[in-house]
Length: 377
Image (cartoon, rainbow, N blue to C red):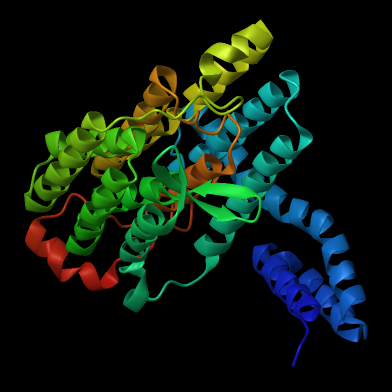
C-alpha cells in the first residue's frame, strides 16, 4: 500500500502536468520520472513540492497571456473573451485586497489564505476548463452543491446561531460563497430543471442557516433573470429565493463585525486613503465583467444580468451590514467562489471571435432536447 506522502507526490505531478501548456507537457513527464526514481516517499513528496512554485507560475503565465490579449481587445473594440476578462478582473481585485490587508497590518496568515485561495481558484479553473466533462454527471453538479449547502445548514459550524461554515482544520469555509455564484450562472445559461430544483434546495439551506446576504444575492439574481425573460423554471426559482430572503429578513442576525472581513469599505479608509481606494476599486472590478458579457453577444445577456446582480448584491450586503466583503476582504471563500463561477461565464471556443454554443436564447422545447449536451461551463 502506497504511503500518503507518495500519493501526494504523484497527485502533484499529475496536477501540474494537466495545468502546463501542451508545449511543456514533457516537463511534467520529466518531473514524474524524477519523483518515481526517488525511493524515499517523504523525499519524493518534498521534491514535488519544491518543483511546484516554478512550474505553477509557468502554467499561470500561460493563462495570463490570453487574459492580457482579451483586455487589449476590450480597449480596441475587437471580439473579446468574457471569461478571460473576468479572470483578469478577479486577479486584480484579489491583489487589491492583499494590498489592503498589508496596509492594515493584518496577520501574515490572512494574506497567505487569500493568496492560496487565488492560486487554487486559478488552478481549478484552468484544470477543469481543459478536462472533458461527462454528460452523465455534469448536469447533477448543481444538485451536489445544493446538498453541500443543506449539509452546512444542518451540520456545519455554528456561530451565534448561524450555521454558514464548514471547518477545515483551522479554517472556516463559507460554502454558499463558493457554490452559489456558479449555480446561478449555469441556470442563467441553460435554465434546466435540475439546476432550478437545486436552487430551490439552496434557497432552503440559506434560509435555515440563516444567511440574509446570500438570500439577498439569490433574490437579486433571480429577479434580474426573470425580468429579462420569464418562464416557469425562472418563476419557481424566483419564488424560492423570495421566500428565503423574507425568512432571513424576519429572523434575527446578531453576528458581530469581524475585523478584516466585515465593514471593510469603511475601516479601510481609517487605515489609509489609498487602502480605502484599493478596496473600492477592487470591488468595482468584480462587476466589470458583466458589461463585457453583455457586449459580447445578445444571447449571453441573461448571464451578464445574473453576474452583475450577484456581485452588486454581495457588495451591497457587505456595505450595509456585518457580511463578508467579497474578494477584497479577508476570506478565501469569496475568492474561490468568484473564480469557480467563471466556469459559468461564456468563453470563446477555439479561435478568437467565435463564441461557444449557448442554449439560453433558445425556446423551451429546443432547450429540453439539448439537455443531454449540457456542459459544466
